[in-house]
Length: 204
Image 1 (cartoon, rainbow, N blue to C red):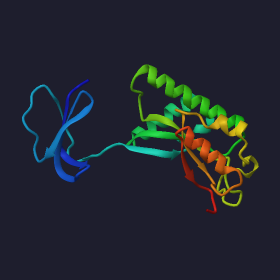
Image 2 (cartoon, rainbow, N blue to C red):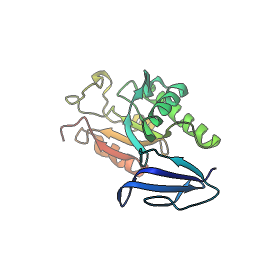
Image 3 (cartoon, rainbow, N blue to C red):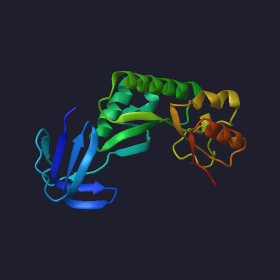
Image 4 (cartoon, one colour):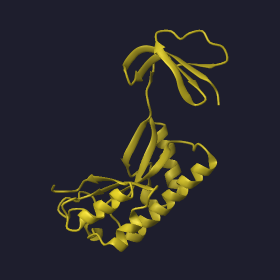
């Protein structure tokens, strides 16, 4: 892995914005940064930012698809195309997001996400943005606040069903209407599995 020295542009750092700065990467990690011109160093590949901004990559936790591809396609090709598109727009990690659909279709999407994540882990750093897991949106939503979600597939939480959607290491985020009957048990189970619960499509 190359050691890189970025210079000639602006930096967004945890301490603030540097209108002109430099940043050195060694072994794939930020090793040093500063304002102004970089120190003279040998053995690094220099990258001139030409006045552009160098900033941390974005992590998108709610994204359904891109370029005609969708998480619900449940194909590795769709997820790969999405990842490549997001990387071109500054996103370095994302949660592939489902919609309220028949349970088997949602599970097929989760199976595909799990498979792509496993393949990426086995093969090293993936091309494009990194697939960090799934955001399960629905089907435990308020029928009066569905937006574009399909009302035919809204469910009341049954443990034998929702356990199929709550997959440790794959399902990272779950959007539901917390006030809906039975969702308290679902929230508790998600919490036990380390899954973040988000209120959405709700009257709460």
